[in-house]
Image (cartoon, rainbow, N blue to C red; front, top):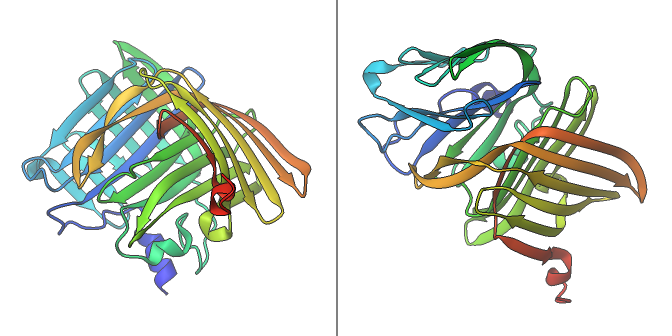
Length: 329
């Protein structure tokens, strides 16, 4: 069954044979009451001398770090997935990071994937079956336990925190997108994830959305392929990477209101036609206020902190999407 195969292969490296216009990356996030760490492990085969890389951002050093690795330092195992880059290791059960200014030893347990079906084998829904998309997104685990030690600035910090794991692959990040993720809302086993992006598909371009609100066993999932539509968006980003966004969506009888804010961000490399030559800014201090109404009745309200946030949209935009479609604005 194709859906099961797609699901099984989601974490693995998809194309060792690509030589151009391709990237693949894994995003490991740790959130502990005393620190947040994001580790991005990537594959960009156009850099033939060193096709694999690691870049990080964290709230301890408040800096981004970068390291490249050639094939002699790389070992890839697909099932179960395990990637070794020099003295660094990444898998579904372990993260070992050995960089000059940041060292991490973490054990992962209790991974929580999204429910899946033939229609939606991954978070991409039926789009998961398309072979050529600019960026294919995957959510491997909404939340899990991460336990170990983080060493930064000469200080060793034992951590018992919450983890999040996702990945992307394709040719480039979207020209415009907004991304947010947090596990911190005061309720255990919880996650809020949001992705809104301008998606090119053949001659068309549309705003595609994916988001999940999970509190323990209660999960709300909205996406373009489930009928979710963007009604309005206002956002602003400042030179230091901080910013805010206010969004409204609807899906059938549901109305969704989201307010996002983030503090100063760290500059990171991003893929553009397979090469890591773009720049984005990511904050690890994002906050979100999420309200869900069903036929006008509030059924959910949550506040999220210590969020990862990337805002790659116009500096200021006021969209009334539905009105524009009707020719009213």
